[in-house]
Length: 179
Image (cartoon, rainbow, N blue to C red; front, side):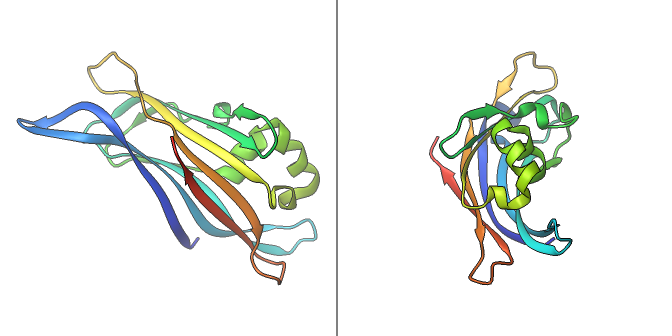
């Protein structure tokens, strides 16, 4: 898969010291990235398709334990739904430099009741020209600390559309939204 522009947010991390006088100001980086891919249309042809890939990376020198990712997804003129249940087996430990990746189209859109039935019936075309609002955050602990640390919420607006007049490729626009 060819990588396209990355929308990245480094989220602040409270009071993690690396040593005397050193302090890390971020621990979990949350990013949403457009990745070139393809998917099979109902007529059997491969359609170029830009995927939204949500990532969480541990940028601290310590493991993040009891990591629980969360997400909510809203469809334009629809309801916002908690789709956190869609993250399979994501609770656990994330080692320093560790990365978790999820495909928004394959995993989170089907977890939203308002979009799941449309995508099931009409395929990828059901997602075209709709605005989707995605919010992502996580909770975790550091070794030896009992307090659960929540990250700030990262927010994006996504819109899939036809790329050009040819009607073949599907493009993805991602806009970072204010907190």
